[in-house]
Amino acid sequence: MLFDRLCPSPHWARCIHRGKLSSPSFRPPCPVRVGPIELPLSVAVRCTSSLRKKSEEKRPTEGERIKSALPTSESDALSIPPTFLLAKSLRDYKRPIDVTGYWMSEKLDGVRAQWSPDRRAFISRLGNVFTAPDWYTSVLPQIPLDGELWVGRGLFSETVSIVKTIDSTEWHKVKFVVFDVPDASFGPFEERQSEVKKFISSLPSDCQHIACIEQHRCSGQAHLDKFLKDIEASGGEGVMLREPGSLYVGKRSRTLLKLKSFYDAEAIIVEHISGTGKFSGLMGSLKCRMECGNSFRIGTGFTDFERANPPPVGSIVTYRFFELTKEGIPRFPSFVSVRIDAKGPKDATIRRS
Image 1 (cartoon, rainbow, N blue to C red):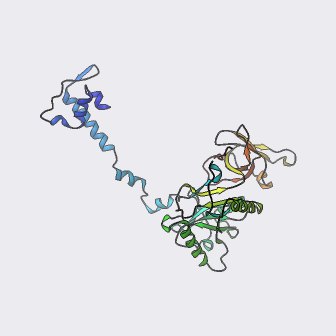
Image 2 (cartoon, helix red, strand yellow; image 1 turned 90 degrees about the horizontal axis):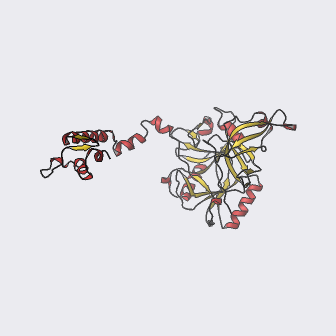
Image 3 (cartoon, helix red, strand yellow; image 1 turned 135 degrees about the vertical axis):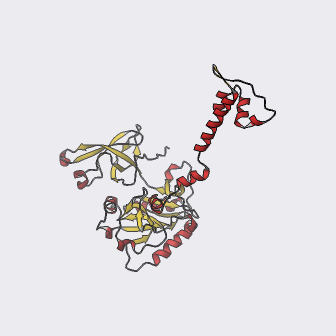
């Protein structure tokens, strides 16, 4: 403490700090010793008072701190990315969760986005704007919507290509599948679903590019297992589970769970490996690095176009695998897509038996 350095004892430091020098009963020792140097008490007091005053001048008030964190203009407010409710994996929990009564829906392999009525645009998790044409967005409401831009099962790469291309002419292939209202003021999940269905029912009969996800009430674990099996047999990715009566929160929450028969994760490309044989002259595999630092290769899951035009080094890619080796390397990894909304590699959470 500064006062301890300038005063001979903690007692006198507290006296100076608390402003007791003007008290008639105050009898300080004099002079004050600072190491080998003796200072008159008045000098020591002026030093500490001056430094304390400067410290207080620099310290912002609580109101100033709050004000500095808020947007200063409408354009600043619109530039802040929206908050999304993100899912946790059902596999992450060692103790089984009773999913009876939960709402089940198909997990779509599309691009997550929120409809912003203020900007009249779709916004990604990172705050990027997807430039859908006016005919596409003109039917959307004056309330925010959370959903997935989706072309179809197994067509994630095509979806990404369309939505990230400025003024793409392929938006007629994309469907915005709504599954929530990202606003806690609309009440619990069931009430928000009613709001979504009310909006969908108000759309013109020829509007085919906006839909809502179908929800099923789970009757138990056997029902969930069959639902997952049927979706994966049809080429779907997995199942999403919503806790009944839950509110929308802009963070990762156990009120939203995902379930798949495989793991997926993100890695960063560090090298292109040239192909041989039928892939001669093309990319044979991608050497990637995991979040934990382990390196591995992805050699399957690519289209001919992707092998001829591989993602650049430094790109973040999603890959799929069934388990890790003892060394922590993904076994039989398969390429899924380039991630446009990820800031870095992210390993899967593996539940150990």
